[in-house]
Image 1 (cartoon, protein in one colour):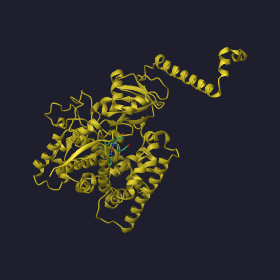
Image 2 (image 1 turned 90 degrees about the vertical axis):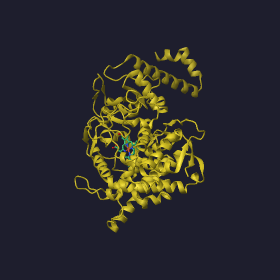
Image 3 (image 1 turned 30 degrees about the horizontal axis):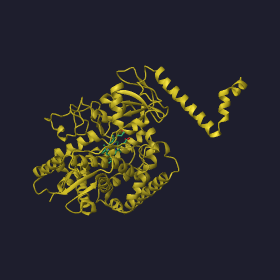
Length: 527
Ligand code: HEM
């Protein structure tokens, strides 16, 4: 038989080709065969107990490219085709998406025995944050760490943060050359990233750490940040230049924090400043173990990194939306004049509660521009999807996308319109929803170990997530963003550079949905 094959005219023609052509032909054949098998499997073998599959041509690649280019459009299109639960292939892994309030609840409030976040996130986050914190430890330990962080964010602490953030914003606009003169144009994400890190580091980590951001810390954090790219889900271990810089930055920053901790311990309680570092370095786990210094240092890195991308991208979107809607910028200014007094006294924590439109601008921007478009979980035991025949097997990854329900006309009339007034009860665009933020008292509450949070099961609006991994930075982020807006509109009128109503597109290439750069806006000094 072998001899017959070898003497077959096709085989003889193949042997007549050069080595390179032979390899190309074999590879082409293998690819064609695997594409054929992949397509046939999708068409012929449909498992009625698994969600419908998004059709794809190439194995492994699956729908990675269409999803990666524009996740919201990918979710919307496939939801229309397949319903609220469907599966697609993301880099070789079957990934099941469950959208809508029921889908959000199914994944985000999943039981610990069923869903797991650390398995997915640890390759990316552990080299950046450091060992033994967040996703480099059992979930029960993370819950305790979140409790330590959350307890530090008291009303008393918030009260002290507003003047700190106000001061940083005013100082930034005073000193930064891009804001010299009567008017100008700026690429807003660059400046919002700086304002976010200056305000967060000063409020959460104290003046001493903040001052170092004018020198070495800014570039070290930049190197650390490079570790947070999607490619590192696969190549986190690779000895690539940016990974080497990431590892060096992680060690150096952790050492800086640990040196400060040692100094503070040696000096004894300074009793002057209330900040996160002071709180964490004096915390103790339930089993009596004091939090080791390296864990305090790593939690400080994690907190700053967790907040940085989300808050900085949100504040950029806010400024872009205000430039697109200059009349809202004016309304925000007038709201302060009316509710705080024409002399615009220095902002306080209490003042923020008197500025509802200011709050609604943040809320509405997070509805349309939530920085985290996809939340992933590994499946640890087969999970029946309530109300369907589907059982999600442990070979799948789960993907929650609360942004889908946040832009669903079933809950938000005219969902594509950025309308900060929709959050007023009598607005024609008012949402038909239950909200799961800390201010809603009558919602079902649950404690995963870091304090009671509302379950959010019925809410289509979850920019801060839900369940055991829910954000603990929500109140801080709101306070930081509201203070930044209030200070900005006191100083400037914003508009698009061509005075149009255009808005830049979204960059989904990084892990966070941020504005495509350059994203220029025009500012004009109010006085
Ligand atoms: C978790 C959003 C700001 C610290 C989360 C999650 C979301 C989120 C959606 C859940 C992730 C998941 O379930 O996998 C946001 C948004 C922010 C923001 C939209 C700003 C606009 C902050 C800030 C901090 C912070 C300022 C710190 C001060 C955390 C932490 C977690 C978290 C520690 C918990 C991670 C876990 O338990 O797995 N955030 N966040 N976030 N966020 Fe935020």
